Length: 260
Image (cartoon, rainbow, N blue to C red):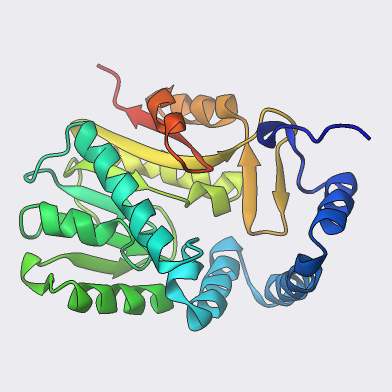
């Protein structure tokens, strides 16, 4: 029997992978078939990917807001938020930084950022009204109302309503992992306008060293050079963040900055 490929070489959309996974995880077949059925329904009823994924988030948030943002348990939700926050602190985050979190979800990392930053310095956006309602609950639960965070619903990633050159840190965790390349391109085409001189934009993605692919329309796998080249096309300097790879998380991270 051949050895399974390492995670970054697997094509999760291939029939071979699906059959192997089904044999190894028979208890998950029913849930996967339910996802396939939901995928077909949402594709037929959605005008574009944002509408499609908004429907996914509505469905998932109704069951469990923490699971909807990718956390299997409350303990994992706390740990992943702490990991993101600690990483930004390690890379120089200060209370007077002005942070934009793209895909803020229910504030898994956001509530720690809000607590740390000066009042009014956090701005979170998301395409899902349901997860933003869950984010409000997180603010109340953590007693962070006096920090004056901004939470906004968006229909795209053009960022047209945000001020130019304002944000010193832009952060997107587990957003591009759920985005087709045209959505990523839209974000990179527009984020430079809102990014302050000397600021940076960190985003995570599901990395493959093999064939780029997606599972349903929910999970997208990209080669590093695809995303760094796309960022450079929009005038950024882009680098793969090796130190993020040392942390216990399945995604990789790229940082883009305005060229010096």
